[in-house]
Length: 555
Image (cartoon, rainbow, N blue to C red; front, side, top):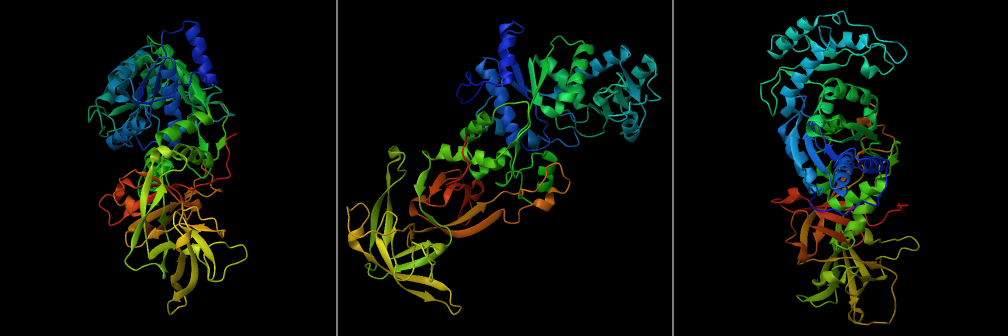
């Protein structure tokens, strides 16, 4: 079922307990779960939680998981989203047992609707959407019956067939369930089962002009596929009575059960596909896979690994109570995943040139450096060193404050993997800005030489100038500020204007052949990923995945 996975049999949560009890009681021979996204946008980190839950649950109990597209709204759905969802599920490490579309069952759903009409449990209503909304009442007031509720079975069958045949305009008629207009659960007050939509469908073309509503289609799809545990988020809890009503009265062979868990909410993040689409449509971001987006494709492009996301989803767990997860927890897991995998190297993001005046002109020596001190199996690399190098501009101050241990006039620092250098003087432009730093080096202080003389308090990184590879660096901050409310309509007012900073600098020469999605730890700067869209670009683009340190701790 899955490409790769670590067993979770010993992990406990209330859904796993239900499954274990059902299997022990012999209610089913195997469990069948499903991941049922609507193809109206790209998947986000909240969907990853559901994907991991459904696939891992079935796998751990030797069951099956289907991938099913709930494509009942042709106005919002597209094959682009279908393909992206397939890619995301597979990238996370899972493979479905069955691939289905709600639209595969349109004929069966239509026939089940006829069964409801014949039982006197559904009727064609001419009321407008606003009239239906008013008829349903409020939480404190019961609903009122539609004037069309008393239509005969024969009239309803005729009108429903004519709806299918395309004789009516969009919104002119709907098919409603006949349940209870005084039910305390508003969902049960004669919900709409079918609406008219003369729209081209990505899967069925123009074959249909009536489409089932999600609350009607979803339980039937589960039943047709033999799903045993239909797992969804808490906002569908009030819809469960309707789910059971459809299963009961449509006379399905299988009797799936719905269970709800808390959706994932994260700080500095919106999880609404409508709002994410708004960010894309209004060009706040450069697409669904913008690294600032919480989409799986955005996280992938930023440099997150499937292993880190799966570990995160397991850690946050499955519960009934809603909670808010600190986004730094997700960052913790990518650090943990990359710390033994990523090549540790040096990059200068905001360069200033250093000339080592007493180093021989034209000479280049090659220094030995570990690729990852925490993982000796990654071996060593050779890095060039010469008279001219680049360092970070903020690693130098002409007039430093107290306890500043990096480079300043008269001070000595160690160059990582190389020598001690001492700042002798600086070169400035006409505006007084330092453009070049002149230093001397001590050849006795070569790293690894065993030098035990004087000590320095500062170590800085660098890149040798003649072999330096030009690069672009993209540094990200949260797209949404802390005070944004996802349930507010004005969330765009909380966009962080500093969510992206673009710098141009240099990386070591051994990275000149870096491939898209290669990952590195840049000394002091953090973990970076080669942007997959940098192929063919003038410079290699590195997206910062995450900084090196965080105050967050997993408890």
